[in-house]
Image (cartoon, rainbow, N blue to C red; front, side, top):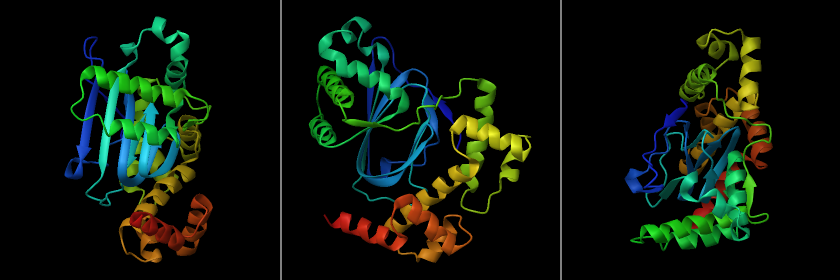
Length: 291
């Protein structure tokens, strides 16, 4: 899972860009990446998968609205498992210079200022504010640049209001700014992404970056705030959730394809992480698709 510093073509005269992806245009295999200068607002509709923001790994489903600050690595993944054809993703990237500091300091834009500051942790918008934002977004088609500008401010105002959003990254999380260290993590995450569905030992990954297992374990936890084992577990459980929702594979087959060597161990891990059994998770997901 290579961390790419994505270049966003924004300028002082073009402060935001809106990208819309629907149906076959949607690609949820985009690598772990970060933007050096741009904030990102992502609206995900009718899709399921694993969302990774900094050191946070979570499942997303149905409707998802997230705000991310520059420098925070992120990725939405479907683990190669086909989602519904009626899904939609709207991504709005904008510069922090879109609103001047003088304006942000005004009392009327306090929530916007708070949202931009808290975005350094990654923010997930919660209901009922999420419903408001999605309702406004549905009316954006063929709107002017001015209308989109006002829409961005309105959504930021929601993110900054009390208890409207949830921080995703841990309070101790700090994105890597050391280029050499960042390149090493790129190799590590890319290798894990390509191999997590099979038996993968810490010694094997450590060898890829010429480190001892103990030094690598310390290094990995320092940069992700997670142990190698926990990170690997979250990746595997994310794929298992996708398989349960979008295939008719048996639990034992899901277990094997997700990288678990023992179905009993898989059941325990799944139950602990999702607070339900794999079969109940599948049934609940199926019921949601009928609503």
